[in-house]
Length: 146
Image (cartoon, rainbow, N blue to C red; front, side, top):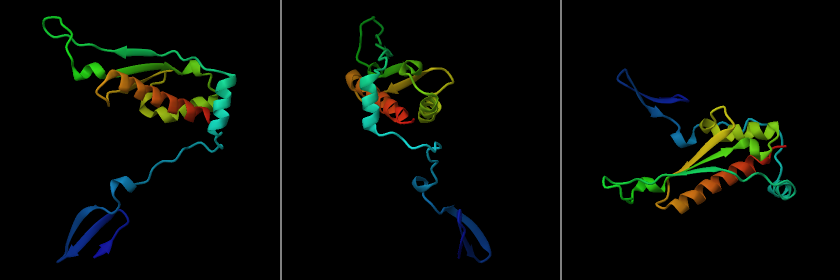
């Protein structure tokens, strides 16, 4: 029996079979933050918010479904919350904007607005709070850049 870095192969009677990956999927290589500058502390960011507050405007979409008679009915899709945020209203430096784009990943579509969707919880209020938590974490993390 011999071990390869990527695959395990078994030799028996001249037969070679691929068994699977040597490393489980959760321990595969992850890409690190590509930015090489030191991050500011959260206390510095909070002090900046006190001196220079940001615009808190967001567009929120809530949907209510009706049954065939036109009456509102309780549907699990009623609790889905979609929030659109304009990143230009956050007063970001170029490094902070690049970090936000990195953090957004596939949510960033090349325009200044991005969308956060939550359908994790059964009520609308809980999903609104989840969206607000995600937006807060994104804002705090991108503002840590110089």
